[in-house]
Length: 143
View 1: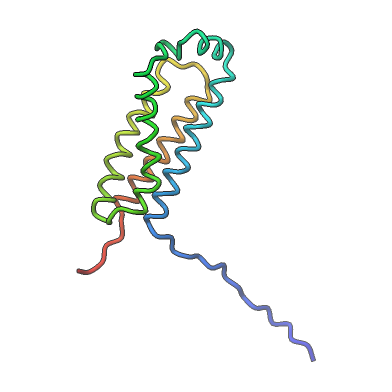
View 2: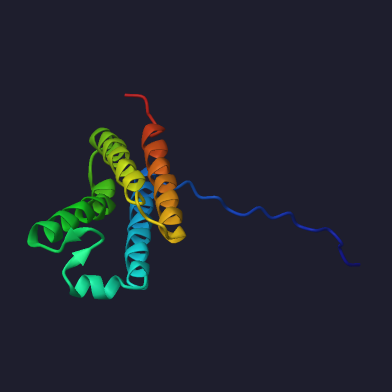
């Protein structure tokens, strides 16, 4: 005699710690930053402009390079800091830094004409909004 009973299986849905969610969102944001910058090299005239010492309307100087590095160092460090900091400081640091970088994402496409830059900025704003959301909704526990 054979049994025709089917066993119901449910996929396991592991709860992911908010610190890991935040760290992965920052890492994902960094990938978008990198790809948008890389695609910029393929715009006609981009490499010639860089070789002539210009990026967009700005001169390539040490100040420009240092400012760009600082601008990208902060979200890079957030990948680690989101895992390492204590909950209260972590929560507020993520909210504040993500809010400031939403302003960067809004400002980046100003004066641009290529759709990938607008798409990249929109994705950045969504990722940064998720960072704010998860940090804001940080699970609480009884003291």
